[in-house]
Amino acid sequence: MLKKSVVKDFLNIAFVTIVFLGLALFAAHFASSVGFEHIPRKHLINVSLDIFGMMLGYVLLLGIYLDKRKTGGTAKYLVALIIVIYIAMFTDAIEYISDCVGDFRTFNVFANTVFFIMGPAEAICFWHYTIHYLDVKNSSLPIFKWIVNVGFVLSVIIRIANIKYGFYFIVDAYGEYHRGPYYIVSKIFFIIMMLFSLAVVFVKRRQLRTIQLVAVFMYAIAPITIGITSIYIRGISFTPITSMIVALFMYCALNVTQGREIAVAENEVAVASSIQENVLPKTFPYLPNRKEFDLFAIMKPAKEVGGDFYDFFMVDDNHLALVIADVSGKGIPAALFMMTSRTLIKNRLQAGDSLSEVLADANNQLCEGNVADLFVTVWIGIIDLRTGHCVEVNAGHEYPILGRAGGQYEVVLSKHDIAVAMFEDQSFTEHEFTLNPGDTIFVYTDGVTEAMNPDDEIFTKERLVATLNSHPDASPKAAIETVLQAIDDFAAGAEQFDDTTMLCMKYNGAYGG
Image: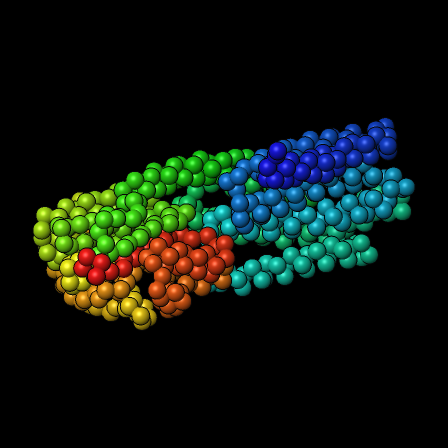
């Protein structure tokens, strides 16, 4: 049985094929109905180029649709740009076929009106496309977008009014097209918007490779040049086919190149994710014969894999170490830094060093050769399973949350030290507290409290505590699953860009007592 996604893809491709190829065939059939002998040779050349361009546009749009990497606003405006050029070619063909044929005067007027509207539509689509592709961020951008949109609406209104007043063109009673007195004015919005787009590209040029920069400039300059030339030449229209050809070149230069870069980035993410997955302990229950504690941990990777990690291990027969940390940065460098940090901390703890000595030594070793300028926030707790006595060090990490037996979860506020690998020769301070039988400690990374919803609101520490307190007696596994569900409900499908990492341990008392 076919998957729904496959059926949906097939139906979408069929729709694009029917509409786009259907319009191209309609233009050819319309020319045949009028009679090729009645169409001037120059017009036949234009019509042939337009139909060829429409076929090219169909192939290009199909390629964009099948490119699964192209999503979001960039793809939306690129598709809109291709559709606008396609409509311009279709109406250009219709107007040349119906020109000087009195019975098709209405066709001629309608086709020319739509064709004139497509000029500013193409310019504004190209401008939006460059803004999204280059990810332009500017405080004045919303105001400028408003001005651009108003200018576009006015351009459309004037072109519709042209049907009555003939600003840009008229079609006489015999069906013959004539340019109006203000024909040259019809090009102004198009030229201004293209130049604005080029200005944006020039400012952001460092984001583009040479071939990409050339492609974008070609897309803007070629139609402008052809459009200006057409002001002085009547009878040959190369603007639509030129726009489609350079759009194809621009797509290949920008989006195919970008697709290769995305593939490389995705491979890096896969490698980093594999490092995380293979390094972190995942066997639960941990030491099932030890009844003094119950623990559970999870690391849910985000799209951009970072360097979150957790760890737990016995330092000796009576002391359990809990570690949670968050490396700055993303990808393979962060994952490797995470692996090195985890190894240094674990080895020194199991060698019997104090927490302050462990982090001081790890800090200096990680500072050596840290060319990527990464750092790691760390919380470490060593719990004496005989007494519940806990020694902790917090190096710039999130505060732990403590749930007392029969009570509520509360944030444990203790003084932070600086994150590890920020500066050499840093000292770290130990703090102490006691876990009573039935108490639970919950530690996490900022991917939990900073999970985003579609409105760009964050989950917050307050919401985390409230979630834990909704089931204060839950086991460590159930507590983490409750928080995960709360985050999923809050995020409502919004994409997350930081790992979600949690570790929870319940102290049962010495020998389960």
